[in-house]
Image (tube, rainbow, N blue to C red; front, side, top):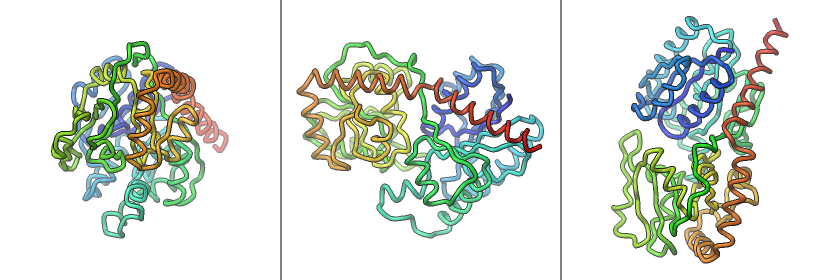
Amino acid sequence: MHVLMTADTIGGVWTYTRELVTQLSRKGLRITLVSFGEIPSAQQSRWLEDFPAVSYYPTAFRLEWMQDAQSDLEQSGEFLRALIAESKPDLLHFNQFYYGTIDCEQPRVVVVHSDVVSWWVAVQGVEPPANDWIRQYRQNVVRGLSRADLVVAPSRWMLEQACRYYGDFKKTGVVYNGRDPQLFVPDAAKENYAISIGRLWDAGKQANLLLRDDLPLPTLLVGSEQSPEGVVASAQSMGRLTNLRALGQQSEGQLRQLLASASIYLATSRYEPFGLAPLEAALSRCPIVANDIETFHEVWGEDAIYFERNNPHSLVLTIQELASNPSRRSEYGDRALRRARGQFSSEKMAESYLAHYRSLLHSEVAAA
């Protein structure tokens, strides 16, 4: 089977893509991969060296959620049409909405990783203003999803949001994201600090809940302080916070070690379609303290500890209680690890996608 897949190199979609392409390649699939957003760094794309059979086309076309992106979308769409005609894949897996509109004979899977409207509602409490950018964005999303043969989301919650704001689709499915457990270190000795991963410039990650002087134990905040549009948000600008240390962006190796030694993971997001960072923490045997939102309950159930939704005081009290209770930390670290290994491995994710691919191709053959 030959799959043409699109991706972007900004944020968690690139991690998702790496995991999925790795597992599908190991299962014998041929992959043609096209990325948008930014040309990846050598470090970002080094994993592809292990898969010489993957045909990779990096581009810097702007992403559909960016303002003034329409010209880039049209050009990148033409690029994809030509590549599809040349490479003749069996199936198309788009991780962006816009390309669902491409006219072609192959079945199309479009994945809803997140979207501007549901993000805006979760963060601002209202739908975004009906300006030219949002109108064009909505039109692109509706057209792309309506023409997809299968719309996939990484959680039931995210699929419900897509249906709410963009209409009904031909066929839908939920495939939870996955990570390779072998990439993480669950057996290291835990040290006396909490950790959270979240971009300060992204209000959906709500890292500002940690910008307090009363955190009950040392806390590390990991994440980019500059958005793709150049907006900078710095924890240091808030003044000296006794127990908070902002580390900025970290390499994968550095992050692996930080998670391995952390005694608590803090999942503060108010908008989270799935949450790869808490999964990575769980695979490192960190107990998860999570914001009381629907997605975290769907993904983690009773194997996480929740603080009152968006309430910084409740977060502090929850950290304080867990920090003073080693046996509870150990219990919830073990529970998170078991759940992550059992339900959210990259191999299980790839098997789910492969089943969807086969179903779509079988339907195409049957209809011929």
